Length: 458
Ligand code: PLP
Image (cartoon, rainbow, N blue to C red; front, side, top):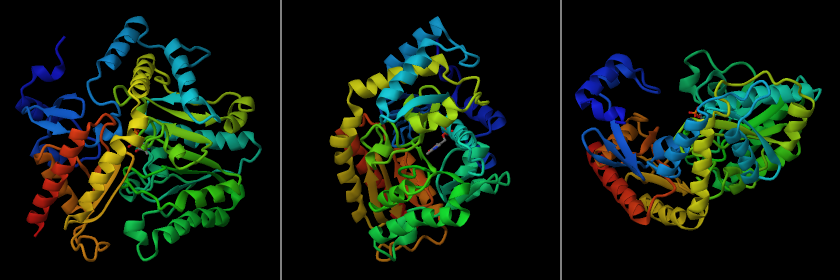
């Protein structure tokens, strides 16, 4: 068998892409004029494009390729599963071994109070499922007025109607007249951008109390849940001040609302624990998972359900009229199991906590001395560099917010590394298998990129 990429010349691929392919989160018209970059192969932390360039994948795809690219064991597991049972569904009282094995495995991996999982194919579907689950739960618990879900501005929870609505991305809300009713957004704990006039500790408490204010204003009897990422990823790797989560926890402990952790990015080792909730000592009632579950080899997501929610959802719930053709897909479940084997056997979670995490953090944070950088931050293997016009006045943004970030992203690509730009924050989230040598290369490339971007901006 030949991979598709080997049978098309680059220019033919570019022309066909421009003629027929609408890209996600892209201005397809200008992209077509420019021509897309075509990635044809990948192994470890390295991508190869159709011109033969090697590019360090500083974003692990889209924050998902925990075990690195090109792992034969996952391909073999999927092949074996497809040869035996390529597809069957999990509706109507049926199941199959890979879905069962994965559900059991996730219950063992997750914190002890999360013992069940609902499968789907993506993080967005996981959050759509959350949306319906929390409302159904409260109906079954005899509190049907509890319908509002609180989330945060600049949080990201996916791109479906519920995911976009729960998310706090205004540019997404303006397309499609969102959010849907019943979602209330509160402020994010973004100290560098929004809280720098206070100490991080004071600001963390204040941002957390926005949740308390919102619950009190709306009425606890009307609030179903609060959903949040432990660290906001797509919002710009917003690492909350140390005081934020303890204060949120206090507020949640005193109130009868569900807490949903969106672990789509933070899960599966990204922060040096299996889940970001464990990193921050949180006890979510529901956890949305995807991405690192299969390291992106096949699409799969899920919602981990606590024993508390199981009472409403399962013991009292009757039919849950919700599901996807591919819920628990056998090949995807096989990919997830093989991926979890690699994460466990290679001790990748511990590696992030004790080895490559601290190693890269020290060097990444060292980039904070660069004249273009206002702040360098990193937890686990998620980092950001805030690039700013005036280092002496670092919280003042560029006049043309976002344009320097895109320039820096393009320079990084030219230097052979993927960094993502969120406004003017440069983001990395590399595979958990990144070696020390590759980490050095990543930091050196980032510095070269900053130097060149700085020169161009002068
Ligand atoms: N939740 C978070 C925290 C995410 O970062 C993402 C995707 O980036 C999603 C949900 C949506 O996941 P998907 O793109 O698989 O639908």
